Image 1: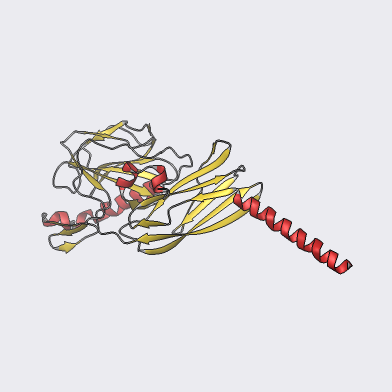
Image 2: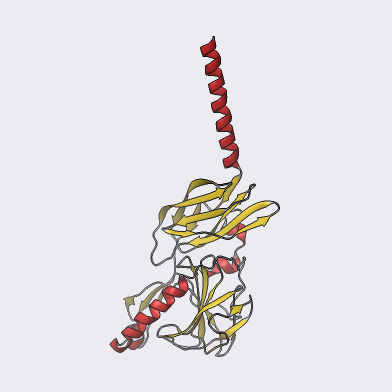
Length: 299
């Protein structure tokens, strides 16, 4: 009889421990899309009924520690991720989310499916020097790439963006994201941004609050501006005729940053803009036209 009582007490103790653990885990809620298209950005949101001391989210080898905010008595962290039409592949990949609350770390693993998307093919005929750069500019191109890599790696902690982003200029879109470029019959990298039509000097505006992390004059992109919006999100504006901001300057959503031009490797005036998310160039249409819930996969 004593053995049976001890067994019941042990069983009840185990049940209570499991119940407490289940209750603790249930206080953390995760929102993310189960599937995304190749080249699309998406959001991950972590919400807790208890104060969160830290949150870390890892996707494709890159870890982000998003800013934690208080909302209706809860702790909330929001981060943006995505895939790049050039470098990523379709299939399943894993999100690893770590939270620390009351000194206790918890780890959650979730899977996101990356689906194939069909993109346009663009066949263009250009002067050969625009397709294959002369050897004397190779050194400059290499230096340009170093500057761009540093700008795309910007990781300020404060999230200054919200969805949807504002449109950078008033012109209509010409070349879409993901278009496969065939230049003079030679396959080239897909187009990893959006092109907007516009006359020389047409206003270009910042798509969200942020800090200018790079003002450059590059071989391919011409006069360029890179704005860090926090938590690994950077917008990029190319071929400008003029630049109205300086490196280190804080800019507001909708603020004038320059004018449309034809600097760099282009055939005429237009704005090329790209969105870098954790170093990956994603389709800007999604941050311009989708809501937070839509990029979380909430219908």
